[in-house]
Length: 189
Image (cartoon, rainbow, N blue to C red):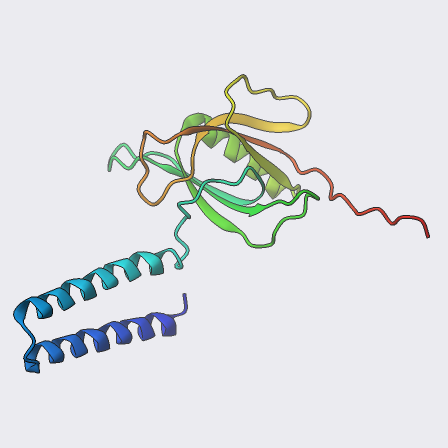
């Protein structure tokens, strides 16, 4: 978000706070009306903070799409010194039925696991080589196969927010070579 936008938001917050303070100092409203206005205003500040942070590029809290084109990755291993749990960041584009990416990359954060870290690292190497990588999510359990052009298959948690919960639902995350774009039929000329 541009710095001008952030400054405008801060100025708007200050203006609202000054307006609320001036109304509470000079008005003859009952004390419980003034206290209620302060509490309601405080809830709006907190709510808008969380809404704005989602616009600042934080990983989304939504579930990872069932099919996607992998744009980039970053693996942050757990830090034993600080106790940080580690995370895996994926930048994805949703893929339609014709294998065309949406063009709008979204950021997701997954809980770190060694298996997922290896699979994501392998997929990133394929991306670095200039190849496209498709990812799929399936909710079924079972053995992962490494045939048919698949890069890796591992159990991966559902996308999370900035704080990762260890009890998240396990999903089957697989990386494959991106299939070619399906072109529409031209029909009879």
